Image (cartoon, rainbow, N blue to C red; front, top):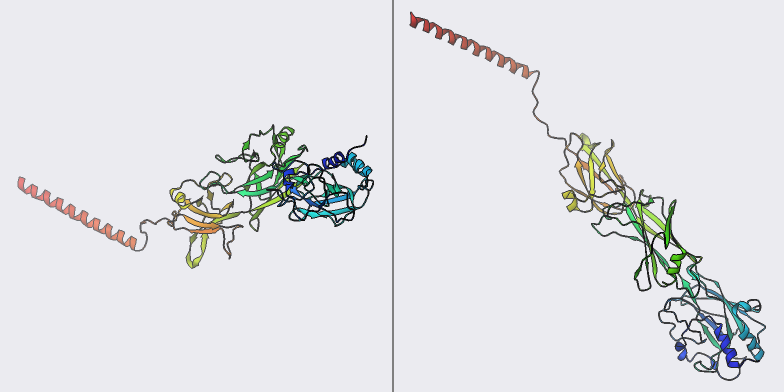
Length: 497
């Protein structure tokens, strides 16, 4: 039994994977070419692709082939997507048999019959691409042949006719559209990486060698395609180390999943995802159970915050960290850079001629602000160390810390020297290593004064003279005393006679 024309036309519309809402097509601009009656093979034709990201709010109804004035509200265009339209030469749209054949085809079954002329277009910044003008009248298999790396789920091949029928439910109805517009969509994922700056006066801020990275991967909206893969990896620079056990009060590496409106979801390590570390790369991998849950959270995000420790300072003072996401085979890589510096203290004793003699044994602490430095409270800790002692060269080095203003203060002086009276010393730490020559950076010098001398006994020279004089005086005093005693005895004898 033959198929009626409206049903045949409707079948072609049905195989178009165009996510549109029919209501949008109610207002057709004057530039759209729609004509009633028979197909006019001499009428100019065009086919335009409008490429957007698939999101939870994307229209899901079948397409009408008409231009949507102003585009789809809130839709995000995708640039650089290539489409190829290939003619199916066995379908002659000027005959009823041609429409009957077209109605029986699917994109899959049309693959072997799409042997005619091919035309290619790539979308621009607005997500639009128009095929060459006046392509032959007929049925086309349109395939997405190239896409940016962020595309996680390419548009399935679809069929479209030139011209395209509006059918009995179109607006206007039962007419032919010669300027055809299609709106296929892609699932995409975005990857963003930044350094997280800790709040002032927190435990993390008092560990200035810690660097926390935030890696945010968007969860794609998939239209009927399973989420077969979702991993996020962080590859760190040689100047960094992963922190397995953070200091007290510091949050470890973590994973947070939110839905499209930003509400946090409970995902469990070992059940929904796993964290593995191999060399300088840490990888977050969602399990089948976790991916099933993610697939219902299209438009949400996965936040992977990675805690690292700076252990050395590169020559340029910039440490690069690279993150990669792989979602359904689509790979995206981003990098972030953070500055890192060091601080060197030189303890010395000034001597004649301006020579600075190094002093070993001076113990210093570093503080985030002057108030803490004066009160000796909340000293900074770097890799578990909160005090540094000068070596034989008078040098104490804090190997790595994020740039900023710091305060250094000596808490124990070298033996035989006083604690410097200058009190806390501020220093601006900048990105890069210490330089003790111009331009001097990340370096402070602390002069020291010996403890006060006390009075010592005098010996030799004049000292011997004074000892002799003192001894003679004592002899004179002794002789005088003896004479006095003798006289008193003589007087006593006379009294008793």
